[in-house]
Amino acid sequence: MWEPAKYTEDRFNDMIDMSIENFGTDNDICDKKFIQHQYFENPVGDALIEFAVDPDNGALAGQYVVNPARFRCFGKDVKCVTSLNTLTRKAYRGQKIFVKLAEMVYQRAAGEGYEFVYGAPNQNSHHGFIARLNFEDITEFPLYMRPLVPSEMVKEYTGNAVLSTISKPVNAFFKFNHKNTTTIVKLNESNVSLMDAFWDAIQDRYPVMGIRNAEYIRWRYLVVPRRTYYPYVSVVDNKIVAFAVGRIREVSKFNAGMIADFLYLDGYEKEAKDLINAVVTLMKRDGATLAGCIMLSHTKEAHLLEKNGFFKCPDKLLPQPTPLILRVLDQNMCEKIKDINNWFFTTGDYDVV
Image (cartoon, rainbow, N blue to C red; front, side, top):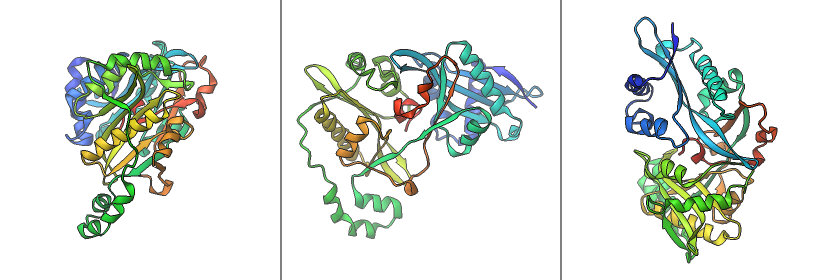
C-alpha cells in the first residue's frame, strides 16, 4: 500500500537511494550534485515532484517528476514541463503509482500556469504514457550520423583488432576536406551573455522552440555536474551567427560525438558548416569515432547536416526509437502545437544525450 506525499528536503537522500536501487551508482540521476542541479537550480523553477510513501514504514515507494521549461510558441513565451526520471520501487510495482502520481503532477502544473507537458520516454514506459496518461505521439526522431574513424568503429563494434587494421584504408574517405575560415569561440561564463542577442534574432525561426537564452545555456551546458559538453559558436562582427553543442558518449558500442544542439541564422550557412566541422573535429580529437545528431528532418539545420556529410541511420539499425510525446494542459493552447512540422527540437530540449 502507499499514500501520496509532497517532496520535502529531508526526502532528498531517499530519492537518490531509490534511483540507485533502480540504476546502480554509475548514473547521472543517482548523483546528488547532478539532481540538485537538474531539479533545484533550473532558472525556470524547481521541479514539480510527487511521492508515493509506504504509510507503514515510511519508505519511499515511487516518484513522478517534471521539470519546468520555457518555450516560444507561435510568437509568445509560454511555460511548460518535461517529464523525466519516473521511478517506482520494485516492491511497489503494480499499484498504479505511475498513473496516479502523474495525474497529480499534471493537475498541479496546470494550476501553476504550465501549458503542456512533453517527454521522450524509453520503450518500457512509452505505452503507459499513451494508453493511461492521454499523451499523443507527435513523432519519432531520425538519427543523423557521420563516420569519423571507420577502422576504430569496426574495433568498437566487433572487438576484433585484425579487422580494424584491415579496414584502416577506409579512413581516408572520411577525412574533412572543408577549410574553416570562420571565427569559432567556445562559450564560457564570460561570454555566454552573447546568447541573448542570438536568441532574440532566431526565436521565431520555427513556431515552436525551446527558449535558448544565455540563462538557459549556462544552466544546461556550462555548469552542469558530471557532463562535459563542447559548446561553441560562430562569430561574425562580434555577434553569434551559429550555435552548436556536442558531447561524447557511448551509443551502441560506439564512442559517439553527439550534436546535442544546433541552430544558425539565415544567411550564415558557411559559418554554421564551419562550426559543425569544428565541434566534430574536437570530439574526434578526444576519441569520438562516429558523429551523430537527433534532429527533425524538416529543419534547415538537418538539411545543413546532410550537406556536411551526415546521413539518416536506417530504421533497422537505430539503437532504439526516440519518440516525442505531448499532452496539452491548457485547452486554450493552439492545436497547431500537435503538428511536428511546427517544431524545432533536439536532445538538448529534454535531457540529452
